[in-house]
Length: 340
Image (cartoon, rainbow, N blue to C red; front, side, top):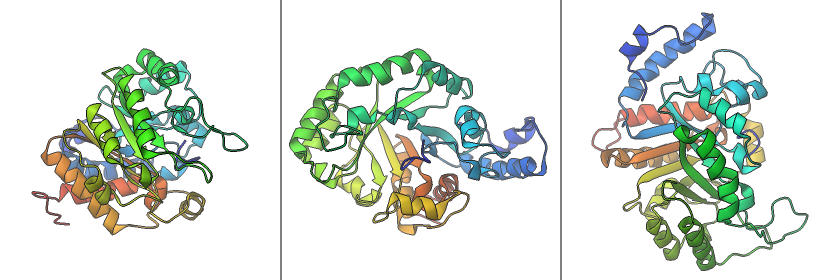
């Protein structure tokens, strides 16, 4: 889950008329309802095509922000989506468990049972398919399943089609930095990506996240365009800022937009995790990043393009609070000019 790795909602009036969002009426639950009534007004001012969410959801530190009660990571991982999906701003979520191992279909069905009909998730492809080097190997070895369409189909497409189809959004291909002694020619990478995407069913959508700037090439951009896949504009330790990436890989006729906020450039995962736990406050606000993201989201909204924003706790300290800040800023954007 996100804790282990870089790991249409009602208007305020409609929310006021509905029964309590939570079974219990504790002081904390009432405070959370009042917070969500305020955020419901913000959500009503956002583009209908925008879906914002977090990289994962099993964080006890989000009590009073997302969750009404204290719970363990295990309980939230199993059953937390029900409360998560009630949040006025959270209309998607990342499923990164699939990066490490196949998800049993009974777990996918349990997730589906907790979600409203219009809620879709962004699922990570297995590391076994997106890692150039063999995952877990004692020394650098080439991964024979790198960009294997057959393995991806078996581990992701088929079980998701059987157990999670109504909630399946874009699949995320995360390509982590190469190891110290590994090299991958950008042209060869783009050719393999071309073959993989060409073997995928037409109904599947793909977002490609690079964490090595050298792999961004003209051939890579052409491959994305050919298969209606998109480049993920990420906020990541070794990548340019999201706004720069928007210029490096223009969206063109891409069917959707995806932004992922992971870690401030130049920082390390372990450092950010230790400094930001328990992820219940903003620790390192980044004004430049927020401006980049609001600009990208505002433009996509004007173009009426489907857009996904996924945020990790390690970006600023608390993923849902970063989403609140960006949403409030975006709700104040008029004609693409930031008025906040």
